[in-house]
Length: 501
Image (cartoon, rainbow, N blue to C red):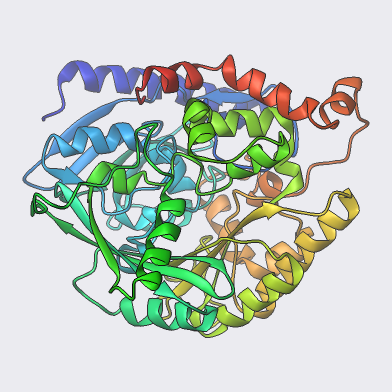
């Protein structure tokens, strides 16, 4: 599909408006934030203000070049719509974030990785070029050949160097299915070892792990294929209300393997179902909602509340209820050599299970994305540990355990995704990230009028609670309010209709 003149003119008009707004704030010497209409961040906003740049209209796919295997996409296109579109051209992005509502621009400007990232790297490593509005209103193109320092620096910088409006994504040939195998694991040490070995397997396309407890887990491998399964083997799906949640299905598969002394169970999954396999249930985080409301957690109740269990809707409820501020929601990449030690630490400190294990090919220095503390950042694989579960109820204890986690990551040479709760002091933050490099980029490209990364991730200032805050803090009123706001959302109506965006 070639870009039409009409599509180009529409895009240029939107970007021109954004550029004019940015230039106005620049001339006034005022900072601004980007309002793009959706978020997958669990952080509370550090500051409030009226200066916002609205990018919510940047929702179009402009071009797909089948010969060059690229796609030209505006920043607010969500992953499910991008995948649906590219599949019609026989192509798919090399890294597809597991939550379908994550946008292309969010994936680039934030920290995004998936089960293909052991060979493909973070999502931003699949981007060929970007169009960006600088803090003075200038419109520039950035790539490995043009404005290279800005191109590399903007990845993971959370919009603090400019406004990303358009991205050219590299694509790979798509297949109809992913042939997925569930390898039973009986210890954390074994999980780390098997994932490390499997990451060297050049035939694999996808690799991840789930630890359900210290003594039970699965390493999950995936191969892209067009081969139709045999007539006796059903195709396994994960997107219908009657389908199992993926993590529960994996757990049942390894139990079946062990009880019958079978080899690892292998299944054929349609590629879209595989890519968004964690949408229903938000990995397993949505299971905590059943506990919160003292509701039975079984296949019948999961099916009954299916429309509320998809990530777009779950995030609406989570944000409105303030419950994200009571849960530890952290993605924490560490070097493989320290992974077992880190998981033993999280077991003692949090005892949260399951854990998601995702091997990552790190980005070379300098970068804002998580990286090993030594070396050039390109040679050592990381193992991301997804730690998502309830934290201490008292605010002081909650902050203390999160700060302890951050200190442990520094000690082990790891990092963390900055979408989540962040409790570093400013000094601690800049001892981890390269402030001299970052400040030089901001100075060179006139971004000093924008909030810094630390401004965006620092702990929100404690404010006096309103009556509404006090009511929301009472269980189950906060959860009920979150559900109400979710039910009123466009995301819920779309979920009920069984449609994406």
